[in-house]
Length: 101
Image (cartoon, rainbow, N blue to C red):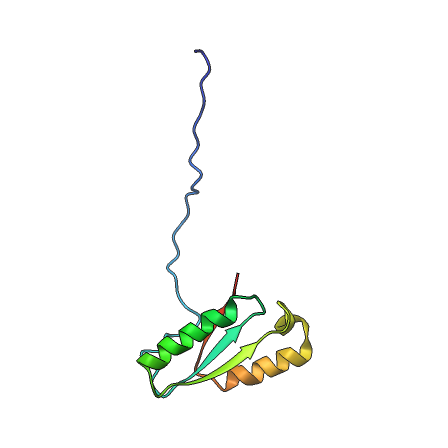
């Protein structure tokens, strides 16, 4: 066999950048208001129901509030929904978001 093939590695070489969050993580969720944000996908709400139940078991003094989008991009595209979302975020200490794909 006279053919030769060059095998290429699909992984790019990059300069690793340390991951960092947008804000500091909370150490304790006790007495916190936890926002649960669900998009309109079918599994988002059931996922967050389980998250809420488990967090409530670990942090019985935590409070929960929900925000659910009617449409996938409604928060970005609809000014009224965006305003409601901004007001909702101001009333929570942290947010858990689920995309139900």
